[in-house]
Image (cartoon, rainbow, N blue to C red):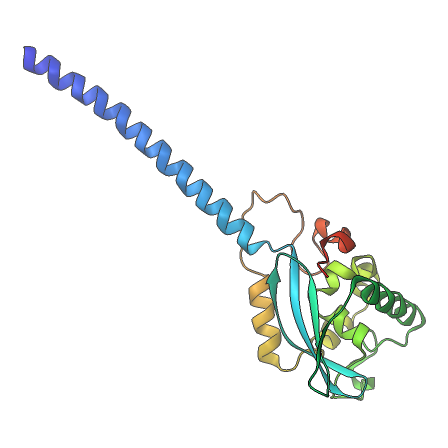
Length: 198
């Protein structure tokens, strides 16, 4: 009888232990998911833009980053990180072009003559960094049917575009607090200036 009581005590202790272990495992899994989620929800984009002809540019590479940073590789081989002031100026110029219909991003594709690339501001808006530095222009671009097609033309190759799309569109947890995901969709993108590191 004594042994049976002891066995039942162990069983109860074992049951409580199992519940605690399961609870701890659940917590660990949750923290791993949160860590993974924060990795996939980058706050910015690191973009390398290459000058392909005088005044023409293409996106050479881009990937998620904690800060938005745009590196410009010029024809002469020199490199430059664009400042926030330079980006703000480029975005203002592009907004004016979009408004008056002269931006390559909003033209019908057949009208886009240069295969060498677009202007620097247009190329930035075609990149994922455009969501951070030119967020307020997003609605104007989304209202234009030509934008998505012309955006792809801003990348050096189709594989560069698809690699970028995959890296920025990793599955996000449904518990995310960042709102809509995707290009120009993040609520946090409205804080464009503050997230720029340069």
